[in-house]
Amino acid sequence: MQGITPRWLLRALPWVEVDGGVYRVNRRLSYAVGDGTVGFSSVGDDIRVIPRELGELPALRSFDDEDVLTTLADRFEQREVAAGETVVEFGHRADQVVLLAHGKMTKLGTGPYGDQVSLGTIADGDHLGDQALRESDGIWEFTARADTRCTVLVLGRDRIDEVAGQSPELAEHLARIAAPPRPPANKHGEAAIDLAAGHAGEHALPSTFVDYEQAPREYELGVAQTILRVHTRVADLYNQPMNQLEQQLRLTAEALRERQEHELLNNPDFGLLQNVDLKQRIHTRTGPPTPDDLDELVSRRRKTRVMLAHPKAIAAFGRECTRRGLYPAVVEMQGRQVTSWRGVPLLPCDKIPVSDAGVTSVVAMRTGEDDHGVIGLHQTGLPDEVQPGMSVRFQGIDDKAVLSYVVSAYFSVAVLVPDALGVLTGVEIGR
Image (cartoon, rainbow, N blue to C red; front, side):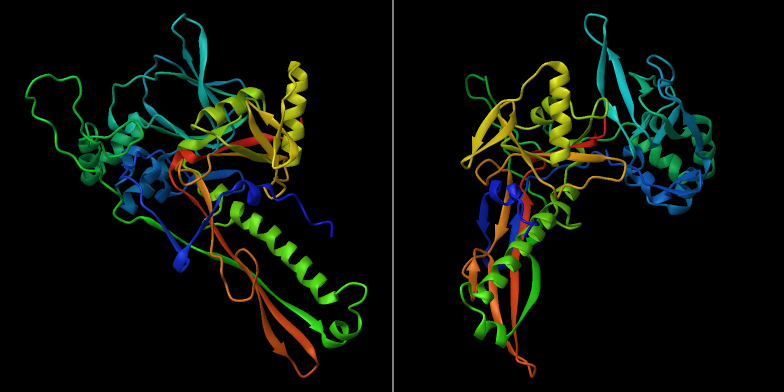
């Protein structure tokens, strides 16, 4: 069976027993900061921002008047930007909101010694100039330059004032969020725990408590199932030299485990690629996966234990290392020699999708309950269990003498805190 792969994700995850089929993740209360990506619709070359998606801008996050949002969406002007062109420039008046519909830009600033430094990369769905909605006299604190050909939607301050003049609700909302009351929080946006230190004498100590999310997420175990059908004649007569029923069950179990790994990455509900925190999604600097990109990915969390990438992405990373004269170290993991970077194993996983344009992603994880990382979820001790979390139930024999077995695998995956999981997106493998 050629479809059997190493399934490194299943082997790298620590598996946690889930009693009752549900696992609850209680997190400290975090305040939304409104750093989401914006969605667009297109008809031919005409691109339009979806009105409701404007709520992803921090200044409009809690504004839900769809008629006013539609009016704002209609005021955006579409522009094409050539590669290398400057979109906004440091020190100039920030009098427009820029939505990046397609392409990639680099934000540039000035370092402490006067040299130009990169402040990060933005790509499809990101935005610039949210402050133009809140204030009329702000300036750009960075320069944004297009790395590729870009399509942007621009909303000028004059059009914002025009819509606000027609909508008292919008004008009141923008005035209120110009200086929003910010609840006490730490640098991660979590509700603060008040402490006192460095005092002397009979100092009045602060009182505090740990505030949790009011509606914690509960992960229900997903399932992958199939019905295996084998004729009794095969099971009775052709069991030598190999037991045909056992072989059928073995290969069916292999196929279910392959599907399980695919679901753990791509399931729209609990899949890792769908549940990456927006702050943990970073873009490549130039397209192919370079050592600089993987350094940035690893540095986003403490104790990065493992990275996963499509084999073609690992080959592209090897080419970039060869270009620089670098040779990634090889480490041993579960008895096998694998490529690593900064001591973190870089494991192949063909379940990470590659687009038709040759673009994929690299996943980095901290794992384990004790480290508040990523964990696999399953339940063992099932009736007729053949592997942990997998059962084979005999369904019966039909009137055509065909045996039927229901083969089921139950599983899920949970991200305990947002920074446990990160993804490097826009990884080009064709260069």
